[in-house]
Amino acid sequence: LVLLPGDFCDVNHCQNGGTCLTGINEAPFFCICPEGYVGIDCNETEKGPCHPNPCHNNGECQLVPNRGDVFTDYICKCPAGYDGVHCQNNKNECSSQPCKNGGSCLDLDGDYTCKCPSPFLGKTCHVRCAVLLGMEGGAISDAQLSASSVYYGFLGLQRWGPELARLNNHGIVNAWTSSNYDKSPWIQANLLRKMRLSGIITQGARRVGQQEFVRAYKVAYSLDGREFTFFKDEKKDVDKVFEGNMDYGTMKTNMFSPPITAQFIRIYPVMCRRACTLRFELIGCEMNG
Image (cartoon, rainbow, N blue to C red):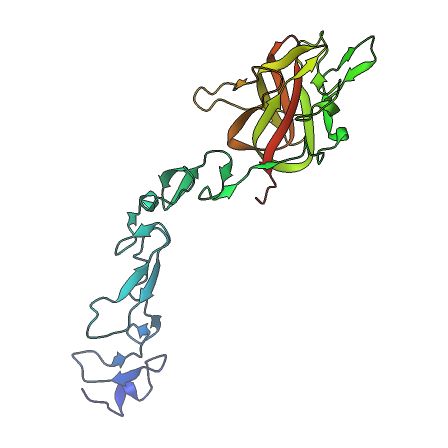
């Protein structure tokens, strides 16, 4: 190859710092292009092996410097959940058993999800959502409790109102009882903010020496206090009927699986002994765990 001062190379036709040569084959001139440029006159940017991207599933193509021990021009840096030379393989993230506390793992495309048993939640079921929210302790105030009806006993002087429906409440009048004429009774707690609810503890009471309690009930929940959704049975996709109490004093705990996200929660008795009389506590945690 000869670099000549005359003819076509008197004016450098090669762009971007290319070197002009003549006397090569029958072409009037030939350009030796600097790294990164190609084309007859070095006017095109060299795309290289990463254009178009050979890596699948949003893998990142990275150029490899020329070395004697490396026999490829690029490597693919794969996102989480994928492997293979070109990130073409979806890894089974469940193989490492990421779900804790008895959670079951479902492998997804490049990810996984854990189905957590209540009261656990979070990406890997690592958060325990099981704080007593304050029916017994008083953190839930009387003003936050309401009901569809109230029973008045002893010539109307005893009011069995919703504010009395606190677990282990004492006294002659120590629970909520619905009116005898209420065909669809309910009691409601307004938590004043959106929270996670993972379970409920129920208890009956005694009235005039007789045991009264809720044998079975449903649970509904809401974010705005207007539209309520009943908690569903996972296997049958129908409103879940929770097993209630068998006597007036023993506490019965039921967990919500999965946990509920709500501000308002209602308990709907569906079967009662003598009267729908209830004391209860809510189990859950703040939204941030």
